[in-house]
Image 1 (cartoon, one colour):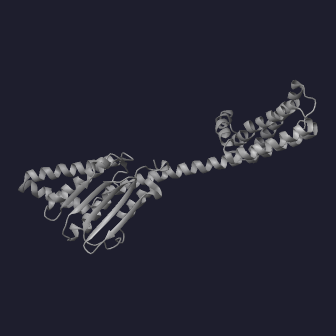
Image 2 (image 1 turned 120 degrees about the vertical axis):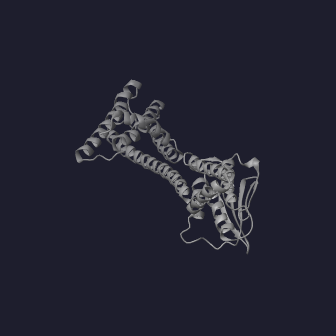
Image 3 (image 1 turned 180 degrees about the vertical axis):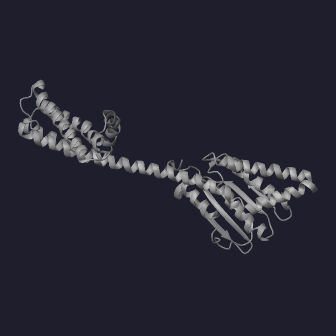
Length: 351
């Protein structure tokens, strides 16, 4: 059976839930009806005040008490009976104290609600009203908890996507780069050293991304520059890159490694596939969004079977920005452009 601290911990959030319009308005209508009936029956302001105290005591105690006793379903029949017994005794004590003991103190001889034949009805209303309101509040709290849990799971899923992106760094590219560095160590130690440092910086950035839910767009661009430098070190005539970045818009925060799959795809389906021309990253600030475009030579042949690059970006964009983000692909006979329009603000639920 729940302990007293459980009930006290539920008191404030339960009252906060009761003042929500969808509960406060019906409660106010019921209260006004009862107080009006009292005034018509007794024509006593003191009796109306007493009824208002009864209503306030009900709102303050009944729903919170029900949540404390029944929010976690009793595991056995004995526990269930014990909870209902305690709930009924509390209702009888509260109603009895206010409806029987308080009127003489206030000098009231008779009221509509505290009339002896009404006491049983008041106790039943206390029990049923507390059950209905408490259950409704508890169900709503459960929905809120599940939504928060879903959001946490979504964030965890986003982090898992980042972990997967680490593996998405083309292994053939890494192995070929390491083999090329081994050859350069004999033929051109300066180039080998530069390539080793670029590879180390790239991997350090990737591992840094795993420890943060977001970083600046400038760091994302730096990562892509490091990747471009490694490709250029392997074959500068084949792999050409152009960065057209509006520096004024790179301070904004984005999910880490968001653009990496797009940039890798542009390289894989452009220069690496034998198409001639540069891979271009363009970032432009617009009034309500940031426009990011990745251009590569070669026509877009549609999503590759088993390919996860575009799908992973779309999932992470949806997690981070909801429906406010847009990813499009435009292709001609010899070029492809993937565009992402990032809204200025991320929704509260995605932060």
